[in-house]
Length: 254
Image 1 (tube, one colour):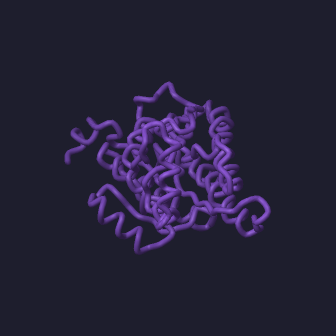
Image 2: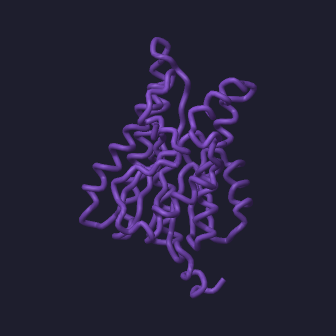
Image 3: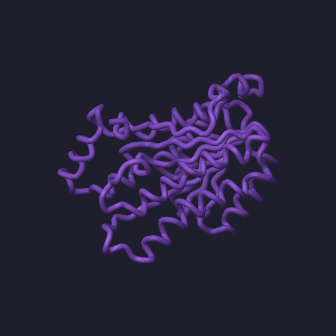
């Protein structure tokens, strides 16, 4: 593809980073970014899955960098790779996250540390360490969740970690306004990802209950979230910053 044709696409010529890009929402978004004309760096903790994702995207416009966002050395290695290969970042989707079921009374220190290390500390330093490479006028998207707005039983630590991301989006919008870097949160509802399928495997009653909370009567798919992330990454959302965009089939709206 020639440079002129590339730049006719919505993300043509932009350099993007997607954490947790091996599967689910991260993978679908990385794939969408490439289709929209961007060059994308994706991260994942497991090398085999990361390599498979890069092959599935099937483009010369993607690079996989193995790493854990809660490990600051891994983040430094990610951004060293971006600096060496492309020199800057235009778009960052801080997507990597985790969660564990744990009703109040059974929550352990390990449960708390694991969730907050990835979902809060990981996102904070994913963004902060990217800033020296960020072009003014760029876009940062944080993957929050409807869980940050709803009191989902047994998931209070996860819920709180996602509420923190909504707060980050507001605060960082102010912190980065002089650089005209937009910061937004996207909050998916129940999305049919490998992680959710694993969590509900063999539990048809739980699956049916989850679907019953969604006015559209179904789970979403990763591609539907990816489309919304691509909108926030692009100049189509040039006057949109500090928001929480729900992609939830109406779950958190009723």
